[in-house]
Length: 99
Image (cartoon, rainbow, N blue to C red; front, side, top):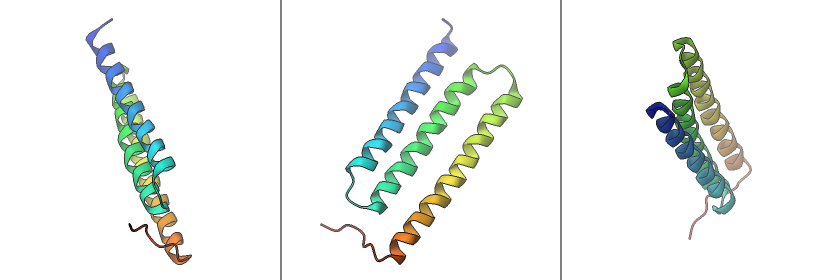
């Protein structure tokens, strides 16, 4: 195994941990606003780490560019959808959680 294999494995594992954290936030947090915050933040970081882990293994720069484009599109889509969900929740009168 080469050093790039270890770097790639570490990044992929770290990305998986962030995905798991986002899923736990989705299941555990009390309201829609905190749930979408946890899910979008953790999943975007997790996907970034997975993309970096895959990019380490790629030999062609065009493929790295495609991976980064995918990540950028997912970032935009995640932010847009989170905003739409939060706006709709506010329209329906769902109040943010307070202690």
